Length: 264
Image (tube, rainbow, N blue to C red):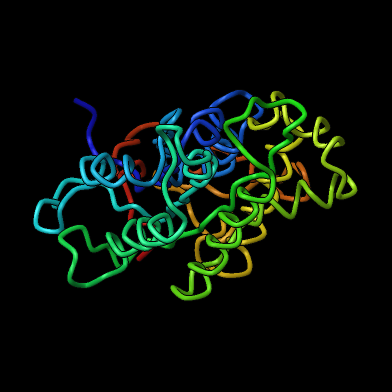
């Protein structure tokens, strides 16, 4: 059993989040960015909607009275709507009003002081579903219907004061607002490709910088002694420190290498 060393970023969602574990996905990019600071835990479940996510998410969180040796969830992304927006008659469909209600429940699980999973340290980011390309899909989804679910995410975010990564707008504007051009970002009319994941990662980083600057990777130290930054490498407009070991005492390294609370 691995010991608790670092706090976590949790990514909750459907196959779009599950797919973010690909080498080019934002899960991998966040893990690289927050290396030695926060562990990235991908809880993406292909095919799931918000109704199915609630009982699963309850099992993914520790209750507030059981956290003595558990990592704190510092950042939480919630990305649903792509399956909820299936047309009525398909088993993944969740009515629009219930979708908004479920999304709010997921937020309140960590944000409400009345919740047994209340986590005041957790900062939440919502993502809208991407637009669908019905030229690539079957008859289970509709462009305008999915657009309404993206609107619902925006409305919930505004009501709950939770920032949004607007995937719909990123991809829609990026393809010139022409549905047929969504092949630029979608592999099958629904799931996103490497180029889209890069845009999403960049917007997640911008959202953290704007709304949760205290959780920027370059504002945090590392859990095990930093030893002084010797240089920075630049990637995709964000810099990443390269560390040296020149302050570790080779005769007695133990005292220099104790776990630290990087949020204290």
